[in-house]
Image 1 (cartoon, rainbow, N blue to C red):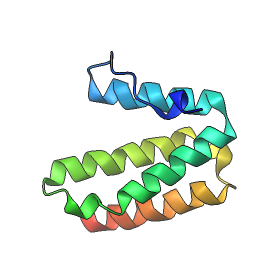
Image 2 (cartoon, rainbow, N blue to C red):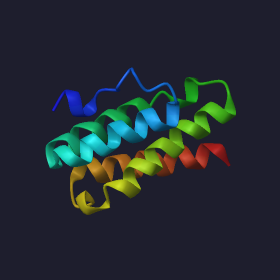
Image 3 (cartoon, one colour):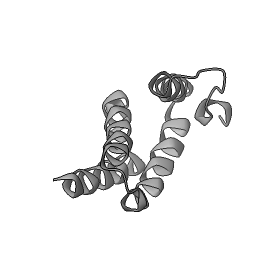
Image 4 (cartoon, one colour):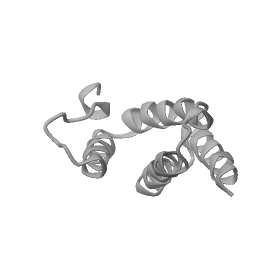
Length: 94
């Protein structure tokens, strides 16, 4: 499971990097999805410390992408937590 939530450092494109990891998380299943959802939700608590608007937007978009990818787990409390945190972060961009 640790490998599923870890980045593949051989991938240099930042978007391909997180999409590859998210695909592995999804392939591993519910436990990995829950772990990654909590990880992203906790990290979102610090988005306001990122000074560059575009970087904050990218981080929020990454969370949104993960939520969309893992909708089949929307009944999980960790997924709901991430959805709530993601919506709060989106509001800060407005």
